[in-house]
Image (cartoon, rainbow, N blue to C red; front, side, top):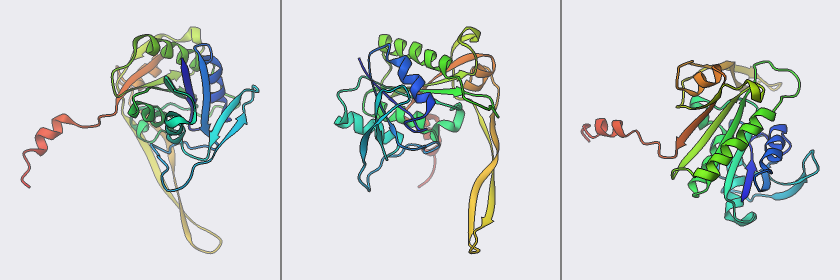
Length: 253
């Protein structure tokens, strides 16, 4: 079993190291991640410039590969032959939850999607850390959860074109209520435009605002986390709204 571990926070991120250390219990692990933070990068494939790949050393002394490309580039490069054949891709551990509509922005989730596009099983893992948390985050529970989910995926497989999106509450393992299969919830964004001027008087902009929240509804990823459960959401690559197709067929073109 050869498992590719990647992320969108950069190859030296502590969540990536915690994930790699725990997943090594399942087989051979190759760590291949971006050389910088690509958070909220979405699904990127770099085609208009060359990609550089090099070796680096993680905090525990183990070796890893890094690239100046995006998280999905890491997966694409590996599956195209930079590494030996990959059986499973696990992306994470993201320091914040990837819930509801976040998945379209998330480099963590879209790295796992890149695997599914190629027919390889993909898992994305995120930790719902507390807002305003100070100091180092404890990724140990999320890493153990990632291993348990990976064990189930290895044993049972996944339907074609399905990615598993895992979100873990910020609890000790013994405090978890269990694992819940969920659907995407509703993310509420509170973005605001911050307009400023540089020293030369030219305008520039920040997209800011308050942190997003979510609707706490039973059966959703938000609801599961708020109740102390690990949320496991199966995502499909086919985004077609089949009910809407029937509506659009009635249009006159």
